[in-house]
Image 1 (cartoon, rainbow, N blue to C red):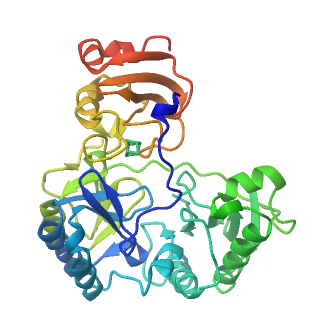
Image 2: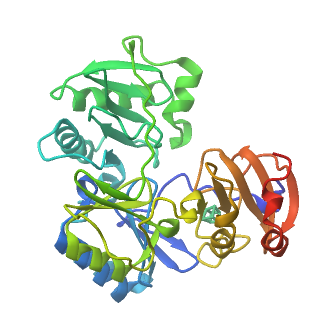
Amino acid sequence: MSAAAEPKVYGWCPGALRPMMSGDGLVVRVRAPLGKLSVTQARGVARLSEEFGNGLLDISARANLQMRGIREDAHEDLIEALRALGLIDPDASAEARRNVLPAPFWAEGDDTHAIATGLSAALAGAADLTLPGKFGFAVDCSAEPVLQDIAADIRIERSGGTLILRADGAGAGLPVTRESAVAEALALARWFLEQGGAPEGRGRMHRLIARRGPPAAHAAPVARTAFAAKPGAVPSGTLAALEFGQMPAATLAQLADHGPIRLTPWRMLLVEGAKSLPPLPGLILDATDPRLQVVACTGAPGCLQALSSTRDLARELAPHVPAGTKLHISGCAKGCACPGPAPLTLTATGENEFSLIRNGTAADQPLKTRLSASALRAAPELLKEGS
Ligand code: SF4
């Protein structure tokens, strides 16, 4: 990758109290407690998005809701309104620490609900714990884990009927109980820091585990469970996918007419109790929709670092992506929409110009370079060449 194309790495994620400037205004990320918006909260966020922003809402890979295009001079008023809805932490550091992702199918009073609630409160109160900005926890305690493929540094999951605390990257963990899980998770976070997992304030658990392995007591094996979310009915409601993880605020308001909303890390919303949902702008309700096979970041003009637009091309190439595979289109080598490897990746290297990478990340060595968007549109089979 050329130095000119080197993306800027911030090492932190935007919050509500610490927003990030983007090409279309401030990005304000709302970390809804337990990943749930009540009907009132969902309608409120939708109204505020239109009043103070550009009316577009993203769902992040950690199941947070991003309000886009917020005017700088409106940020303070927005925060007060979000605070009145119960969606704002006491301060920016508590907001950053409370990075807890519960499995979206939790039920009131079950292990996921109880542990995620306790962990969120403990992290918010642990003012001495200075973790890297992206360091996160996953609480995934149902019989079949659903978050094992989702990025997290510390995991509490069920394996063979036992709750296990596991450092990301380790194949084994520490058996815990509902009562001990929160304290042990915080102890593991402190161990990560003591072991030098975050030099200069940055670092991820899986990198530390690759260097030195997990703590000696983490010896209970954890079974791997693959889970693929699809739009459609689930026991607790209906899952609706969002095209490129984005929707107009009006869609969120209309979804709230059907029930409370749960945010998921699969770029989908779970509408609690809904048996079906109407077609609304930005929603994908059909599990065979080809757009489910493409991911594309904000791209130009919404992202300041983007070298090209991404989503129009992704929409056009979606029907040509071979079945069972995935195409990632990235506006630069940072690969925000898909940090891990994808079967096919197009990384922008200039305006409407892309490199093709196979089985890699947006920053990996390309198989082909200087592919123009128009050539890809005219001959989408270029994606399959060399496979
Ligand atoms: S990957 Fe996309 S969203 Fe992320 S910095 Fe690059 S252009 Fe922006």
